[in-house]
Amino acid sequence: MDTELVLKNISRHVDLTIEESKFLDSLFLLQAIPTKRVIQEAGKACPYFYFVNEGILRAFFVNPAGKETTIMFAVKDWWITDMYAFAHQAPAILTIESLSSSEILLLHWEKMEALLAKFPKFERFFRIIFQRAYIREQLRTIQNLSLPAEERYQNFISKYPYIEQLVAQKQIASYLGITPEFLSKIRKGRT
Amino acid sequence: MDTELVLKNISRHVDLTIEESKFLDSLFLLQAIPTKRVIQEAGKACPYFYFVNEGILRAFFVNPAGKETTIMFAVKDWWITDMYAFAHQAPAILTIESLSSSEILLLHWEKMEALLAKFPKFERFFRIIFQRAYIREQLRTIQNLSLPAEERYQNFISKYPYIEQLVAQKQIASYLGITPEFLSKIRKGRT
DNA sequence: CCCATTTCTTAACCTAGTTCAATCCAAAAA
DNA sequence: TTTTTGGATTGAACTAGGTTAAGAAATGGG
Image (cartoon, rainbow over all chains, first blue to last red; front, side, top):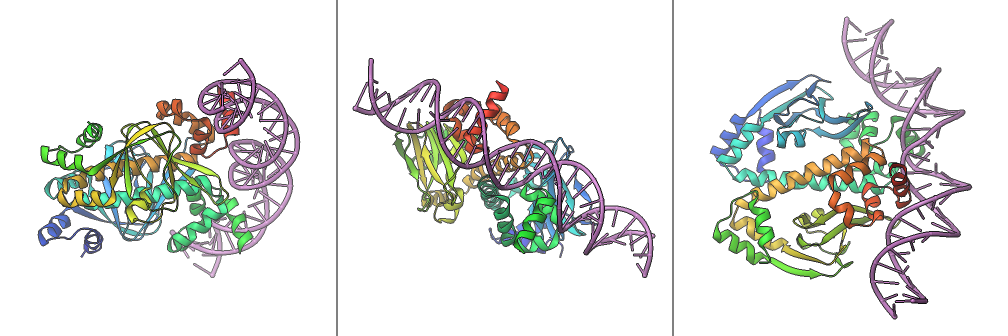
């Protein structure tokens, strides 16, 4: 089933009745995505919260000078969107693309609102999801501001070893806030 | 009333019945704090979620070399805690101190759990709070990684003009991830 | 399999931001 | 009022990390 993984993901935090499972099932749109496809464009509306069934996505910001900064990677069993744009239903500031051929589930903003209205239980699920996301971002801020690039790199590969295998080094560099050239130097120094 | 402000804060996102208001009222502990007092020590348990009734608090991280990094400021009507430690009931990684004499409300972790168990409606409130916190942190990450110090400083003073008035420059510097000396240079350049 | 494109590496040079140390200033304590 | 004390400023020397450019190594599409 297409929604098997996401139902399992949700039921890790809230128990699901048959009715709720069925309703959830009806909310998602399944989409197969080839590699290197942009699924959310900066500047455009951001109607969807994405769940990764298979493959890997990347969200990034392009600054005025054209430099890309990777904000997050999302692998199988992860949720991703431009949360600022999604929550405010405002133009996106991030671009989201696939880094491999992927299968994703789309939860439309209105469907999510309907879900929360019909089954307030899911407020709990998203409360937990957002609480964890907040914690993750806060830990990242701490590291960005208090540790040198080399330690941030070490922490990245020990925290996300599977991601390190899947993405290009220049994308890890852009996640760490350094240039690919400098990451190259760091790696040489330590291998 | 001690809890007037926090009840107003909560009712901005969920409607409160008399019963709920009364129950909430019974959960908080009021505390008056003199200036420069540590209310949460790194390494210790983090049993409380704090709400600022009056005054200003600062959460910061001390890296192995002893350098302080300010993670957040909290003024009147803001919530603050070491969310990682609070959620996992683990030793704190942040220190929280008052920057002026303050009046704060303490919500104990167990009371919060009890609240969510008794009135699931508050899952919604915290869902919204954490969603916003996540968005805030993500925007900060974007800026930290993609903008030079001077622009981060400009953005800070336009986003938090009232905080700029209240705290020392070296604390703003530590929030921006630069030294006080360098912030001094930036300010000279632009005034 | 080959060609084209993208990614990774290396190296020389450059700069945003740090470090250290001295001086200045303001506010609190005495 | 004078004395501490901590924050702000300045400047000189330094360094983590950036830039540019070129070659080497993967990768991938036809």
